[in-house]
Length: 211
Image 1 (cartoon, one colour):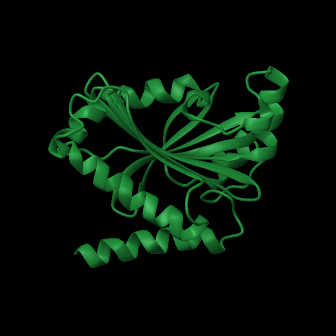
Image 2 (cartoon, one colour):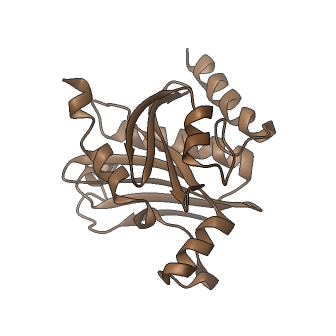
């Protein structure tokens, strides 16, 4: 079963390595209407910030998200929505996804394990719990010619968020330069620039969907 799972995930990332599309069945710069026409998964949420779709990445439950600047697709990615009895299993998920992104894009330009509070640092069995209360965060980042990629595992208030995000360089730089949010010379699109509605929707855990 483990071998089958690894082959599934490897095949998933290989599909994108050789596809003419940029993310799933879409291209950067597509309009919202064009993305909706190309996406075949179940639509979970539509807001002014973009679109959320229920999907799977190999055996991982996930939500695909799309964000638009000026009705042009600029940011996309996945929230992984796996439920685990043991919080440390989220770290294993993160490492699995990281290994396959690395296989496609090479070694990350940054790969950090950051402790905000080191209360549980010496007890590796509690690292998952440390993530859930905001003490620990994992982040990895990659760059290619046209995209910037971030993989994040973080948490707060006993909730864990695992996200893989792709940002088109030209569209995001143009938008952020227009809004004067950051120093473009040192630009890398981090978690905080993701539209707030996406974060709120995921943290809500789709309560209306499950009832």
